[in-house]
Structure formats: C-alpha cells, structure tokens
Length: 115
Image (cartoon, rainbow, N blue to C red; front, side, top):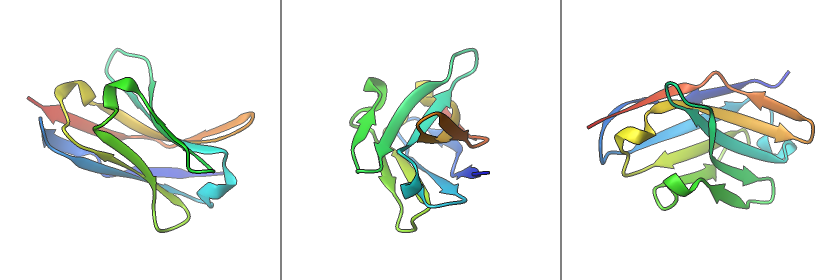
C-alpha cells in the first residue's frame, strides 16, 4: 500500500509564500504522475498542479504563474511552491499519486491565507 504524507501547510498572510511537500513510501517515478489538489470549505476538490513521470507539468488557471510543482532531490518527494497567496487559496491541499486505474491520496495539509 502506497502512503503519501503532506507537510508544510499553515497560516500565512495574503501575499506570502508557503512550500508544501509530499513524501511517498515509494519512488515517485513508479507513478505516471504526481499531483496536488485542494478542497476549500463547501467546494469540490480541484486539481492544482501535476507533474508527469516525464517531467511535464500542468497547472490550474487560478494558480498559473504563482505556484510551481517540482520533484525533490529525494526520489520520493514532490513539492508545491506557492507564492503570492490570496485568501481564495485557503483549502486543504492533497497529494495524489496516479497510475492507470489506481490513485493514492494523502490525508492533506491545511493552508489558511488571511487577508
């Protein structure tokens, strides 16, 4: 069973930055892609960004130019650098590992952006 553990969430003022990290129990290169999702109170979970095993990245329009997804130096980590945060970014952020027919999720880390 693959385990994903997110870290790095917290409280930050608008305009600030946070760096989230996802640590997987196995190499992230064993998955087709790794992604970050978020779910705000009362809203559906949405894709924030993903990176494929080949290194292709994709972002939600709402975070383009502000967030960057990257693979860590360790082969089992993925990071999400979040800059210029605004209150609309407040949500629980989840890490997902994807293979065809299988998804693994972490338990999430809370990001709160105050105005």
